[in-house]
Image (cartoon, rainbow, N blue to C red; front, side):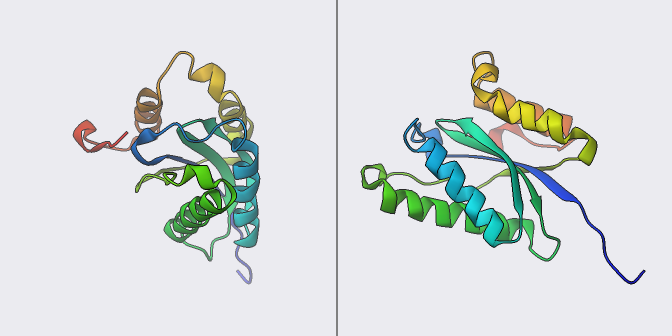
Length: 150
């Protein structure tokens, strides 16, 4: 085959350090826009970005020539630095060390998009820990709860 064809779509999830509720109504839209810009600069496409005051969900299409870990490192480092610069009162802002990354088939994009858009409604019933554990289980990822720092 002379060409390569990919459709690498990920549902990315990570929280603020120590789950501090530092993403508020004033910072949220600007942070999401900035993260979308980071993805564009890396050749990716932000399909949906949403979350709560202590965590974020990103549905994104990524390029095959960029490693997932490099993308997440850049997303977290650059957005954290940007938050400090634009919102100096949030000097405590940083992201947790780890993340969840789940592949999404093209047929499920709209379902995941709605799930991300409905975070506030969803979290009226479930906390972040329960949500994250359910994502791990649905994606058949083995884990030991004692190592979850959420």
